[in-house]
Structure formats: C-alpha cells, structure tokens
Image (cartoon, protein in one colour):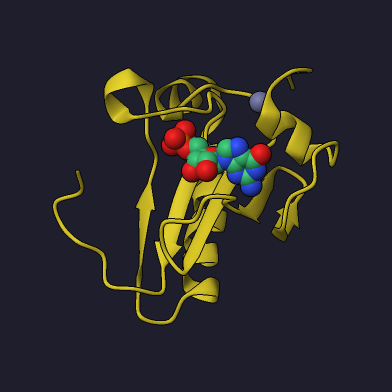
Length: 114
Ligand code: 5GP
Ligand code: ZN
C-alpha cells in the first residue's frame, strides 16, 4: 500500500469511486473517463506499478485470483464481449502507476488499437 497512490487511496475508500465489486484482494470500479459504454478498472490491493512487476513479485495464486476477477467482471458487466487492456510504461501509455486492467465493452471495439 502507498499513502500517495491514487488507486491505493481508492482501494482504501479515501477517494470516492463507483465500485462494482470488491474482494479482499481486489477492486472493480468505473473509469471516470470512459472510452466505452462499460469501462471498468480492476486493481489488486497490492501496490505494484504494472503487470510485469506483479507477475515477478506476487505468488501464482494471487495472480490467478486477480485474473479471475478480471474475467468475471468482463462476463458479468457486458453482454456482447469485452476487451481487456493493461498499459505498461511510457510506450504502453500508462498514466497511473498502480497495476490496473481496463475492461471495456458495450460497443464494437476497433482493431488494431492506436
Ligand atoms: P492508464 O492510462 O494508466 O492505462 O489508465 C488510467 C485510467 O485511470 C484512465 O483511464 C483514467 O481515466 C483513470 N483514472 C484516473 N484517475 C481516476 C480516478 O480518480 N478515479 C477513477 N475512477 N478513474 C481514474
Ligand atoms: Zn497503489
């Protein structure tokens, strides 16, 4: 946990967010700047900057449990399919440095993304 990280603060309830689901180790909430009719963010409680760090540091069971929440959020919050994205680093377009998966649906997604 980090005192200053915006997503740690959302996890702790210090910054309001539209929560969709909470487990002891993860949180699903709505993105404030949605790029699709459904645009969720899924974060682990563990403060890690990105996916590469998460898979290097966390036990496999924790990684698996987190991925399960991501897939369950996609299935339960959309009907016609969904897209999962995790941006890492400058070239990946990451702006918040606490691991998050974007889960987007409710419209047909273009491919390739920009
Ligand atoms: P990234 O650019 O790092 O992949 O994604 C960060 C996402 O977090 C962006 O889509 C942005 O809209 C979202 N975001 C940033 N600050 C907040 C916030 O305070 N609350 C919520 N709900 N989403 C946020
Ligand atoms: Zn954090």
